[in-house]
Image (cartoon, rainbow, N blue to C red):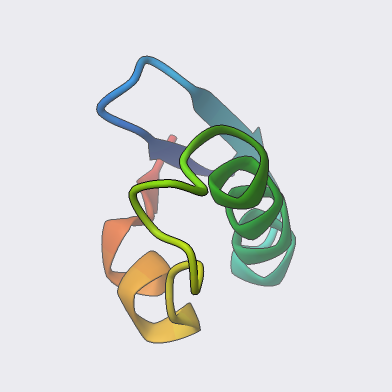
Length: 52
């Protein structure tokens, strides 16, 4: 199991890094669009993923 934690308190857990990247990209677009109008690069998200 993998997880990612956002500084805003959002947390996602799933079985694959690919799923977490998709979930995190959607979260950033919906919640942090003004801070990250271009979203976050896949590589940056991958570095934020840890084992759950």
